[in-house]
Picture 1 (cartoon, rainbow, N blue to C red):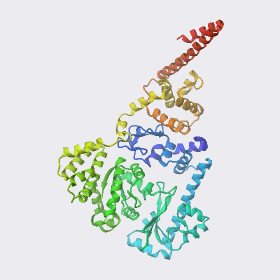
Picture 2: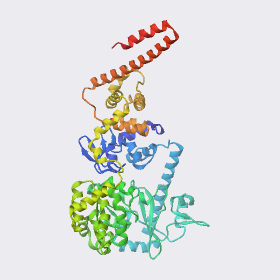
Picture 3: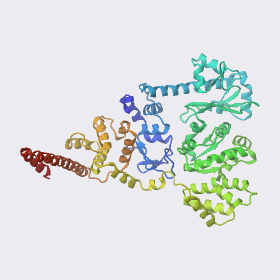
Length: 591
């Protein structure tokens, strides 16, 4: 894997990219002893089983068994190839990565860079039009009426698309960008006779990914035009279900606050930031997806939903609640009074009133209760219908204390007993299919799991010896002197040892480098082996024991071959050969 890019480039990035610092940009890590732990971003869990070991510069999840070095993390997090991960990390740490990729990877990177460059040009163009062009006077007046300051407008790169059918196309052609590229990116539409600008007479909101690169736009019409909001179409590099508006600016504030606020629209998030509520993002007016949830749990597990308080807003809220709870989030719902959206509420009531609303935001179960009680208030079987609405949320709770309190709440609102609700919950849970990994149990039995898997790996001596060599390179020289060649029978041990012998004498060698040369299956085994503690302090004694066990195995294998050869010699009547083989067998059987 490492052959795509010169080793000196990889090494330069490794030296600058501290794994704890890099992963902290995506996962909320807490220090525990020598390691850092957090909720795994690669599978659903509630108790943290994701571990980062700074002294080895590796990560490992005891739940889903994903593990590796800093490059591997970026590959999994962004779903990119090794060269693409190197480029992303190189940009983060200031190391230029040459264009030495395979044609396929190079083409994808080229397309990505083109998309980001074109979108950045469009953002700057729209912003300049908003700030200076006479055609944008109404847009400037609109933003002023919404109370947005020039500073916040610049921070979020707001812009305006003129009403002309080809204003952006002409601008881009002067910059060397063709119409075909604009159509591919989603900024232009190919008509029957010619292409035209997708966004016209609209207030423009650039949409950035987690790295701050513009991947698309949202355009709000000023006046009575339709649709009210128009987004960049779904492309290879833009999907509303995979991006949260403002997350690139909010992620650090979310981590510091310990919770995230999700609003429904651009203006809600922008106004919140202007009022200093910088842990706010928006869902681009679409239902929350699992990808949205995974983005958020990297920074905080408490989520407050602050959608519009009208009927459509409530429906949109409910669609995303269960998804977030399934991912291990603690959900609260902020219902604003008088049908106001967050933008209007903040401008009319102010930040202190907003904070009071946040403090009184209700739990997911209570919110569902409120909605269901209103929904079934005139139904004769309302109690059963309401209970059916809230049981999934009760069942998804992992903390027993929280679950007990929620059961009490439901019982009191339905005027029934705790035991009646608990019994219905038990029946509901028993009827649900058991899906996914029990990461709570896994996190509590980490070393037992590793020990169990080690037995499956192959002979104990091979894995024990490989473990010692991974921990201390001085052991490698002792092993090569005692056991020449690649003596490993297990395919994983054989491959790791082969790579190790080729690179361990390099001054910058570390066990984490091995991940760059292994396939997925072997990467998981290496991560598991590296995370297991060394079983004792007598390294020399353990090494001698493992070497002797392997030598004994080799002798037994040699003896078996001799016995087979003796049988052949006896069958052919070759007495001289039989005498020679018997002599060899006696030597092999000596202790």
